[in-house]
Image (cartoon, rainbow, N blue to C red; front, side, top):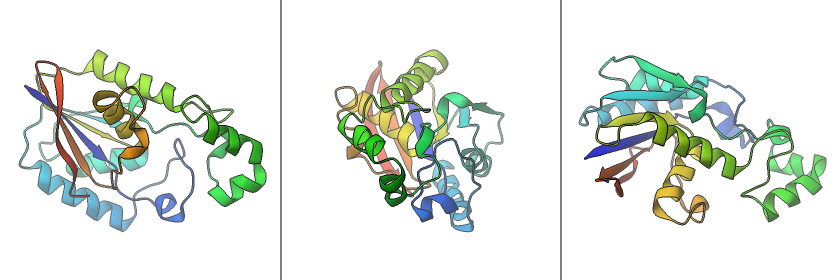
Length: 195
């Protein structure tokens, strides 16, 4: 029986500003650093064998703080947040002005819309699940430090039909989600711990 321990990165200035950002690369705020320190205290009660992190600064910084075992971390683009393409760097109100047609498309077909130069939520989910199936040993405990979209696609994949539950989870910055696998069967053992 192994666990995937998902950790959402700490807060950044772009989180507080309400800006669409996936591949943009801000650093943690002071509050984000504190959130990561709280997550570390919780993780100290959990054993893990490997730690993977998105290669974006906010996740990498969070991973460096929470990695109490000081084992080598594996950085990967597979755990990056969704690429919002032409939406990157804008607030919702700004997008309504600049890209009204694209905003409408993104709402009407949110699973498949790729933000013109980015990727779709469906593509994000395939990337995340392929990573898990290719890289992880589900009989061991593995920490993945990543982003809201990645965590929600993983949860939706294991606990609903494809993407049906994607919008039904709200993992806070610094929050921890634990999925335990019993002979390959996923069980949600913890949600938003510490966040």
